[in-house]
Image 1 (cartoon, rainbow, N blue to C red):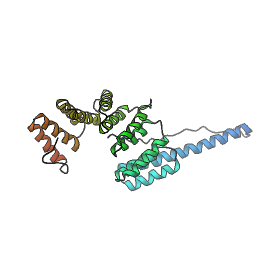
Image 2 (image 1 turned 90 degrees about the vertical axis):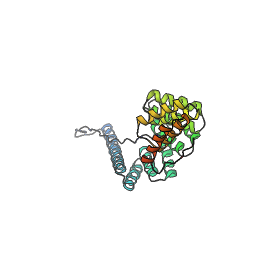
Image 3 (image 1 turned 180 degrees about the horizontal axis):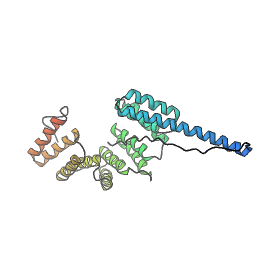
Length: 260
């Protein structure tokens, strides 16, 4: 399941020289008060972004305690913005706290009900934690965001999740749309290989599996699927090669006799 990377941006804002007259009218005073208030908001926003940047930096260094501390600090400064909740969710997921992560992803989605990437993240969490039917609702909301640039990710997530939900027609439609937009989308390719395998179209499944393995580093689940495909096609040599890769790259996942 693809989750969007959290992008932390630090923005600056230039300011004018201010009021130069020695006398200030009431209208000027009101304008100056507005400028001061705006300046405080800009500083508050910049502080939020800097703390969030520090959180992301600590997360990148795998200092999860410090990352969580900074992310919570950012949230306290701007509780109405989704970014800090999303980063906390990512950290909690890394810590193995799935339920805490889910609650944070949902809070971010509630704060940004029209923001495609945030909605896609929550949908991905739902699908990855056993709620595929509910996840599809959130993927649909993500795809309704006309300004959402990473539609291929949401379509790939929706397609893989529809497959988990037993909605095979939707799965194939969404996955093919995802691959039309991003032919190298690894999750869409893996899901299409699985879809073809479930339909008994083993040659097509092989082709998608090979494309998936060429697009990104292997995972244990993809290698296991490749083994099962080759066994169904009667190619014991290819199955043995994939089994050898599985043993070497994922020894904890290797099984002596994978079942189709």
